[in-house]
Image (cartoon, rainbow, N blue to C red; front, side, top):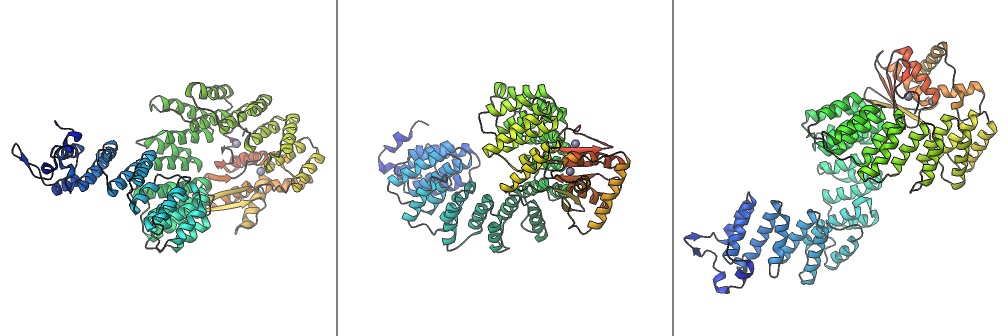
Length: 637
Ligand SMILES: [Zn+2]
Ligand SMILES: [Zn+2]
């Protein structure tokens, strides 16, 4: 091409307005035809050819040129040539509103926020009046801060009630669960609400954790209008805010209705709900559903399956999904490494850590290190763990976060290097949280270092960095040295500060239903049979020489009473229910929200031996696999 745009635009206008002038026997199609060709262009080369022809034929001042320019912009953008498409506006004299709005939209949807705002300001200073398309485009680039200014412009130009603009505003205010009040104000004033605006508002409530308001609005949307996006927001909202059972129920409701069809996002959210309550049967059922309904098993679905199987206690199935996955990103590898770690297969976790960097050629992330450090901590691999922690910063340039320090502290604590762990906490760059302190206190109790344990606890109480766990640990430490005055002191302190001990809850899934038990619970329909089984088990394990570990009780009670309250700890009720309601020999999977106490740990080992059942127990910290009288954690957790 001999002529540049600058040269062609300087040619006399007379010649430019002819659209089909012939040169060397070639007739250029009229501009209307070129527009159609641009819309249908299948390759960027064709778009470039047409662009060249427009330049060559001096169509710049043709009355149809603005349309052509807009089509060119769209064609470049649709072929992913964002830079080409955006540079058109700079080559255009007096770009019109449509080109401006289209360019702002292209910049916004491609994450070029600064460029979108530059174009928006250029438009405002050119005295072009923005329309609803301009605003819905620039809103996509707004942050929760910049939206206020754009909102003012919206009102100034009288577009506050436009459904697209209002939806865009609700969407930005809702982003990151941000400004629910402003979002609601805009939403309430909308004369007509589309499913898109309602979904934006439901998202806003859900992200805030206000699942009740989200559900109420979801129910107000007519059933025929609910699309899969709104269902997904609702299911995910439940799953992410501590309502996994509701998430699962809503998913079943969606299937019962038959439409809309669940997609990848629906199953990922529902699988996450299964992981939280250890609903393995439901998780397996969703896996079958995914295969049957031909939902695309992308890397996110794969990772959700790996995570679900490993968190629901079936490491074998997690491994099989991982091995069959055609494509795995670092998140999938992290999920598998974490799976091995939490189940106590530390060597496998570390092997995968090497493979990930070797054969897969992926760089570990901070999350990878949480998993590998946990693996080291669970297996007592002190030197490896410390080396791993140091290599994070030195070799990989990853700054350790509180979670990494947490793993290091638990690793050192487990090895009995309590003073070193204490020093690390004191010298950390960030403030230690209650999790990290509880971990060190747990180690103090386990190692019988009552002096350091007491020093730490008193320091925590003085500085008001405590949770119910801290008090329970302190009380347990007093109890372990039979200092019942100390125990009483802690109890009155807890009363004074109105600290309620988090109740232990254990769950077991039987026949697709999750049954939950609290300590001493008598609410279950089969309560009588459950307690009969509890007593039967107690007698059998006592005849094997078991003596209850009464240190594990918080209260200062008479020996016999202590024994009874241990006997009805929530996990024992769940195990007893499992024993009476499942086939002999089948494995039991128990999920507990707190750490398993030492006495229940001993008892579960014995039950696994006398019943010949494999018992998989997930507590707050890790998985325990009880088989034939011993546990995979090696009695250290
Ligand atoms: Zn217990
Ligand atoms: Zn164990």
